[in-house]
Image 1 (tube, one colour):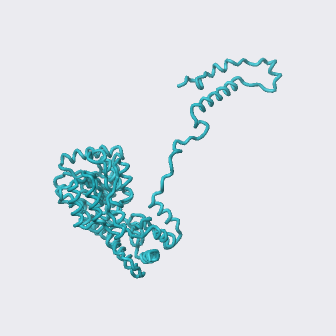
Image 2 (tube, rainbow, N blue to C red):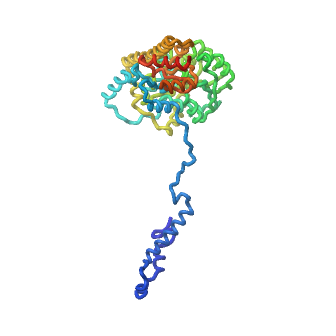
Image 3 (tube, rainbow, N blue to C red):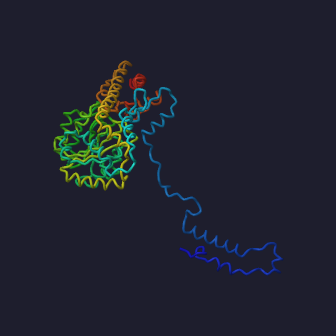
Length: 463
């Protein structure tokens, strides 16, 4: 804002002309001479620095805008992984990370995924942006997988499905949508315990997160009576989150007859169900069995929202493939809901990534690839089930007198062992076995080669 040729509003020329040349006869008596311009620039510099220092306390040093930001707590799962990496034991086991491993303990890419990628590469597809709602072929196939191809909701087209950034993104879209448009309540009830990321996702979306009883630490099973009692007291029209199958982190699922009672109670209390289904097919090996609860609720006339992930059941972890589905009253409502979901998504990430959705859609919509996928996902589920059985068998061989039936009763990738924090600490320090302090293990980290060692270690800390 200053005129050219000035510093802090002082014109250079006005200072320069105030100095007259020193007469030659006088200059000889000095040991040195001072240039008028140098003096002027020195005065200007002093004035400029004084002005800047008065106006900005950060002028004389590097100033931080974020000195008030505190160090956040480390992620518990990532912390386990880092500790595991530093361990030099040849017998070390990482049972913290929720990603499938084959029986050699290696990451596994499904054969049907490789074939789908080959088909896509042969088509020389472009990399253009997807629409805001994502890849339409994938969205439809995903909804049909969850709800069933013959479901009345699918046939009448009274639903909307949008592609999301895996399960986490789906939950966040759902949380934001409910916060903006579900006018009846801001309270969302989670099972206790629930996936650790549920609370921050819904809290950051602006919902009030509360809890209902679910897991019974005494039996390492489902606290059915406690769940019914708590749910019966939830204020009407509140939101309730339900794990469709393979409850994370406990692996404890209601039986079909229990699901029926839960559905009846939810309907009676006029609660709004939000299903999270991250393990369809991966839990039992049967996509229909794993989706049974969601479909039963719909059959009972209960409209709901659903989050899906294809990380576990297709091994598309890094592709971030998911869907958020809203079951509506009619097609007109579905169109209006879709329009608002697009408005929500646009400032979040504009549109979702294309590659993973193409892979999943190719598998779901190509009959031979779909059949191969069903076989492979069943194979992954069966390996997990086998590891549970082998762990219990080896614990008995070790001479353990505890009842470990809950390990085989639970289902899916995770198992709540019932181990106490001090026992978990001993497993890590004495046996280099890494897991979360609550005793949860990822069964995918167990192999035929290390299951005996794990059983021995558990017996040593629990006998």
